Image 1: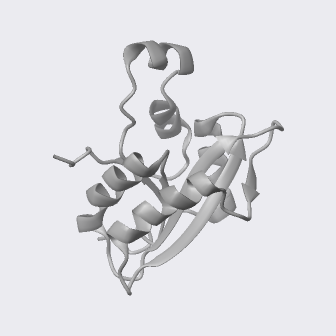
Image 2 (image 1 turned 135 degrees about the horizontal axis):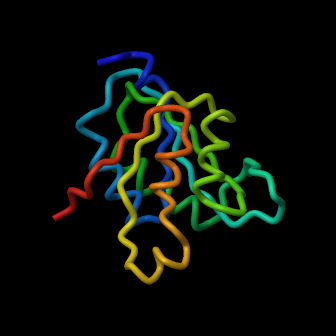
Length: 141
């Protein structure tokens, strides 16, 4: 595999269930010495994306679920909680802020009504990102 492409992977997770699905989906594809930049986006007050240095309780539980599934000695983990007015835009900003070389996620299971109201954050991320984006199917059974 291309070592540079898989060097720093930005992995957005929405909550503990999504963290589990994403961790299980990406686990078989990770190379040693990969850095996983695990991020959760919360609603931001300003028009810009900012990184919160602490973990709120929800993000902490979400990160813990992800870490428990994926922990390996040969992986590096970075935990980044973002504040942004819109999820996809915040993630696009985070690509540059974290120097990510790839984005990887599992699609969120949202119904057509929510998708009509909120749009399609995954689709917007794919179109706006300036690094490759890998979408993994949810493999939970």
